[in-house]
Image (cartoon, rainbow, N blue to C red; front, side, top):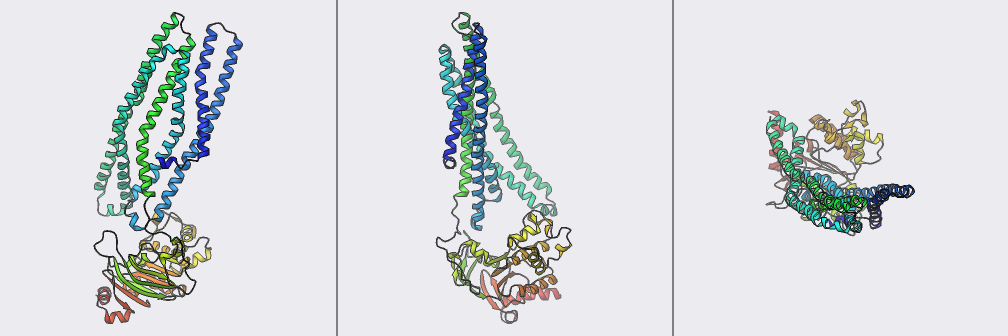
Length: 571
């Protein structure tokens, strides 16, 4: 939590403390003034004195309300500002993660940390700035005022305060571990719920709705039962406060009325003393609640900074180099890459070159390493050995922003963002004109957009779930085309297209990419057959390179793929 509090603005913090002190002073003066009114009225004092004191009370009340308003507003702005900054930092940090770092956190826990944990941090900051500053002031000053009013009743604090502290100690000792475990159970609940939503079609297809419902019920009931246990203990807190206040008030009134009966105490002093007792015990309770919440906040802060403190593997160089603006050239020089903990590299010894106008196709079986090669070009993975170069510059010597500006990437799984077709295409080129968008859609065979009632402004649901797989792929390809990059990377993005659409799209791509390098990852022979050079990948290594005819004549792996697809279709 120290790191969280260091984020506070020092000048604003000083102003908040000043306002809180003034607010506390206003509250603490009221019982004393009220007692003066009662005492003067009981002794037959002048009406003008009573009205004067009443007017002072009214003015203090109004001033306290105004001061309290600005104090709460500043505190809210500061706590919400910290929450805003933490969420922003978390989002930016996660965006900088490579696939390696993302595997260390599942999606549900990242969402929980960005929402629930940050919200709890905001809450504790709000409480600390308000209550943890005000409550000790109230306790000390109220005790002094109460003692000054009637020192003979001060002994009751020796009963009331230890009683409430003892009760709070036992409650918090029981409830703290339970609340700490709730954060992990929240992660689990979010995870199961999210998997149920994203996998709903698979669940229905395999008729496992009942199993998934039971799985969710298990996580949900576990969360419910733990919450009930925690809140059952917490339910004792208010009765405990009432018990402490009740015991203290009984003692005050028993002894106070005796003193009043023998004219050793004024009734106004008794009322003021009771009010100060209430303020002191309420402040002690507030401090106890804050100390109860601090361990939970500490866990939330640890979870947040666990993400923020991750050392990102892929970082920009301290002294980046600009890629020369020559005709583009892509080179893989003895490149190898292995996932952490894997028995063998995903790809090894990859060597090839491509220049402007070249179309390089990479084909191979599932798990051969094709997508890994595609991800190494925009530096989504960091090479283990060797180098990926663009125009003779190692991609590790270039800022990620400048590198990826030169690459149009269409991922294996077409990812669309909620919004409109226009906003999704603008991801590839912010500020693109309608003419450019329609041109990119025409090349990507996205004619279906013209048939939509709203055209480019047609709604795209989260993940593009209101479009078919083929439509999503064509929109993803159009997004890559509209950026007009130096290097196009199509990672198996033609797989959901029928052969006719596939052929028309590749034909339309040729003039649009004549000054760029096109890298096509595919499993279908029809997709790669017209490439200038085809790389055959098996077990992470290039086992063949050449044109379709050359490989068909000389490469057994390529011939097996061809036979399994073409001859299989003929049969």
